[in-house]
Amino acid sequence: MTEWEYAKQIIETINARGGEAYIVGGAVRDYMLGHLPDDIDIATSLFPDEVLALFPKAVPTGIDHGTVTVILDHHPFEVTTFRSEGTYSDSRRPDHVALGVSLEEDLLRRDFTMNAMAFHDGNVVDLFGGRLDLEAKVIRTVGSPYERFDEDALRIMRAFRFMAQLDFTLDEELVRAASALGHKLRHIAMERIAIEFEKLMAGPAYKRALSSLMAAGIHAHLPDMDRHLLEKVIDDDRRPVNALGGWALLLYHAGDANWLAAWKRSNATKREASRLARLLSTGLDTFAIYDTPEATLDTYLRMEGRTDRALELKRALPIQRRSELRFDGRDAIAIGAKGATIKQLLAHLERVVLHGELSNEETILRKEAGAWLRHEERS
Ligand code: ATP
Ligand code: MG
Image (cartoon, rainbow, N blue to C red; front, side, top):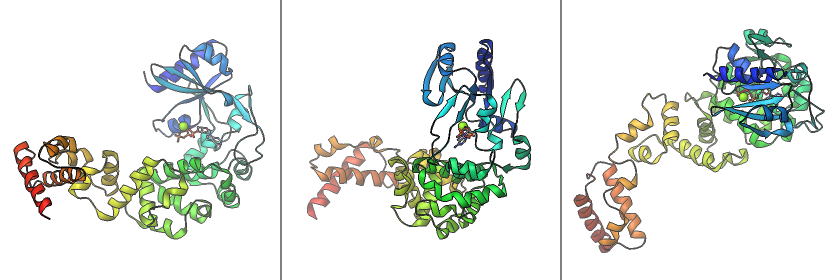
């Protein structure tokens, strides 16, 4: 069964209980664009406890805002009770969410017209002209952009990221509102801003989105971001291709190893982005192919417009990891190496095998190890 068929099954189960249910949000947008959606969200008139009771495998994943995750054959679907949002006193989170409202009210709280449609039984519920905006490739807020950005400033970042992902333009009033209210981004958690920003960088139209973001002055509200840095990124022919590539390109042009710190990314992201930024400046050599994790290396290759992939490059090496070396710590100790020398000896053997100077055979490596140790002792 396809994701759509599972979603349909969930909707029919809810309908059989007398509830209303629709596919909503990004999945409807993606469907109308002919894209495969990442995930299909469902909105329903039933309350979370009713949804929980209806499906044998259902988990209350976001019960405070009415969300239950229904799992069919290991496929998760978020099923959320129709809700409206109360006033926003902090430009960040509604003061309360109200469950048990109508579909219309649920659609009204959504950010953009293209994200505010619902789909059911072959019919699209389109109250705000989302379909026309999709056809015109325009991103427009549901209602006044000033009000909507004032309620939740993250929507400003979302507008630019959808622009980058879909190669759409932004409604003019939306841009003016973003300019006027960009300062409200300080109320938003950096992690959430960073997620939208990395999606922007990974989008095909990231150059256009960055240019408009600069023109609207939004960069001034992002950490360590200036015009000069963004212009360098835009002028670089290497495309970020994914979030990691985006951070690496920024790091590379910022020329400051600490540049990512303020963005609150995970340690793994910081480490791999730094590694990738270094590769972007030094280029690839045998040791880098060996030492760089596959995903990072693939990102690098794609950024450079190469058609070869990490796995092929790694497979062509004499060894893929140190454990494949036909000489290990125990062998080193057996021939009399001690302490830090053991590590140095193994690193030496790894290097010569990797560079094809010696073949990875026990007797050959043992001989080389002995010679290396004797040389070390003499010097
Ligand atoms: P993606 O394909 O990137 O997941 P999406 O449109 O599904 O895109 P989500 O962040 O998953 O985006 O949000 C799902 C839906 O929830 C959106 O389509 C939109 O209707 C609504 N939404 C999400 N964030 C906001 C927000 N900050 N303000 C208003 N509505 C929002
Ligand atoms: Mg989504």
